[in-house]
Length: 514
Image 1: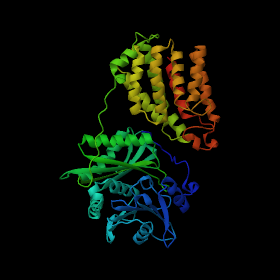
Image 2: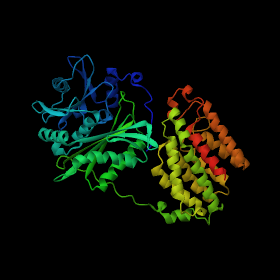
Image 3: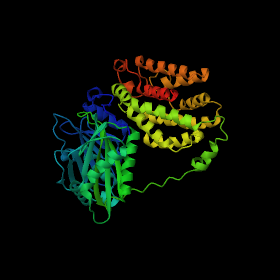
Image 4: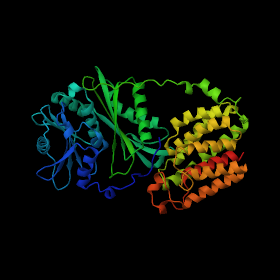
């Protein structure tokens, strides 16, 4: 998982005008056309989803303040009303929400739950069949919204069962919050966990540390229990990073033989720019929440079978002969050079990007060195193909994806082309089908393209390295067109090489130096 050590929300709250109420009263009906805006006598906006007028379940109203709506509030189709609070108009009361629902034709005979962030955790009766639940933070509110939308049908149809569900949540839920920090711990980027700072090495360790902390409150459970597990990424992790966190959470729970239901939301915190993730866990009777089905075990297809791979990339079919000792020396030299250069790459990426490029390339290099131990490198095409499977799991970020695509194409090209240069060129052509990055876009392509083009034309490795070096130097004066650097003003990147291009240059120089 890529660790971002600086704020990466591309636009500040003030630029987005998030505290302008019309942002929400105009935006949400566009996202959900069935939403109708209703005004309270005090001028507050309550957005009612007409599609849920005749819902057979207990209705849900979520109360949020301007600028701090989470993705759960915005996306969940089980929320009947969204109330917007803003300074000067006072609190949105349960009576305000009930009047808005009635004016929109919503009957809530089965009950109504009003959920909001408050000063303390509580559940209170606010009238016949009306409950108000407060949580102490956005994470718990998102978790509750998930439960109210995904509990068993019998529970969602009964305000009494919903009340009991919310009381159990308030009593049993436990949380952990982790944020990424610019400082280092144990020689790695620091992650501030509930139990203190720790150096980040793998997503698995970071997630397990928080899960163990949260699970301390749930060591013994009687009866048929489902663990409701909700995690939020704070200030925008990438989709890949969220998938990795979800996968690590699921693997941990399954290893503990725990039945669970897992959910996710994104929270923006404009007051604290730190990125991170939070986890909330609550054990509940399975009569209220059923566990999600376990994913089916992956089954290899014939194209993925090792026997097929060996036949496809067989040395007997290859036109290039590979010397194990020479290939090993070049790989080791290149990877060790990248590992040694990690602080410099990280420094560059801290200025112009996320700050994670150095760690991504370093971890990928370490994985390559570990993988080739004991491998027969005379069978290089087959080895490269197998290596990709390892890197896909252990090398994150955009760089990791591009390297995996390129190496996948290179494995086949090494088995079919007549020279290394032609194989490199063939793999480059395949890579360019999957990325819009070209020369001049201030990416790793500014090193890769001139290196391969020069090597193919001249056959001179030193000349190819020099062209790659010139390409990297050129990125110091370029304005980024792609990637996170594109969000920065050109003056912020001037004089700093693209970290991905620089890292690739270090790899190529290392591999060609032996």
